Length: 581
Image (spheres, one colour):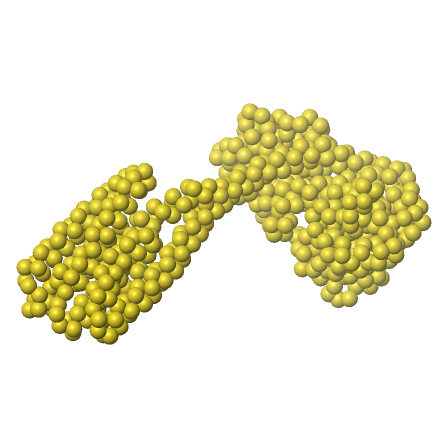
């Protein structure tokens, strides 16, 4: 809002306030005038009192008429100056009538004179709160009342009259000063109020735009998640199949590195797509059993080729007392360590050393990533965990990167109820360290094994429109001795479903009929059916959303062979056991 428009709103609001107070002022005028007539009836001729009060009543009626006109006017803003003139003239005439009492109905008795002055002082004081917002109106009213009395007493030669005259002038200055302060505060309050209204409206507009942007971002992230996960599903799936069939140890080793690298890529994609959920506190950890020693060794193995190429020494020091089986969110933990190791490799000069350390002190495991790199000065350490921050612009130009890795790692560490800390000396190196609390698994003295589950030709209906994924899913399921019926969209799935299907794996984004609609159609005809959402929409919260819609299970793409086996075991084997009981 520009200054001119703001001042007009303030002015109209003050005018509205004065008009809202007008009925009270008219009532006070009539009531006090009537009392004054009653008090002066024996000292002042009755005809004078009658004429004075009649004029007071007439002026009051006119002022009330202006009040009703203002209240009913739908275009006050356009006619504000006209309304102001009515108010000003009414107030002026009313003030002059009261001022005229100093001559026209002024009593002879000094005691009654003091009573009249008391009434005048009361009216002036009462007008301070009601008329002060428009100081011009207030000043006109008070001057019209008091100045005639000052003149009358000034013409008298007695010291008593001089005292009254001086007292009235002092009183006039006092109430005017008070009214001026009220006027200034009223103006300031109104301006602040209107500015806040504009600010609130602006914030509402920005909040609406932010909501739209957030919705657009969610749609974009969902689409990106789907589009990136779909090809990754094929990559990870075929790597898993090749690893099962390959007997050559060197090729097995190479496939293992490719497999772990692909899962690492998937984890990075998950974190980038899910960063807003991490910072929003909506991401939850999944504590699952794992062999930390194996996981750390595999993680270090991923970085060996990069370190060898850069002539870096990479060591992994694992405390032998760490339990063989612990429960933690290994994916998020490895994501933190991956970012820290990647950072160390990037910023450590040729020929230097990097060490990943871990030690156990029940119930915590402590991690350190120590490097002999370029280090970070004390000032930059304060911001290094913020998004898109690196030590300085020259670092970005020389080493590259977005500066998001440490921010993600720090936010993930908070989910573990801890935080990453840094000790660093420029040109000597850095140590990033943190600890997490873990639970020890039952059967901790045994290796964590993976039971291979085979089925007895149970029928599974798969709805998937991507041809590459169709081939992969068929291979995965037939390798487990399952009979697969493959369809390309939701409509075909509904038409093909029969009661002898043990399970339906339903893609979500398909032509003709999507997976949600197909699931509901199948459930309506076959309530006992088991339908699992098989989807590349895998942002945090998607699983709960799909289960809430009525799906019996959820499996994200890329398909994790172990999770697939667990799901099939839960959905099919448990179903068969319940039927045989």
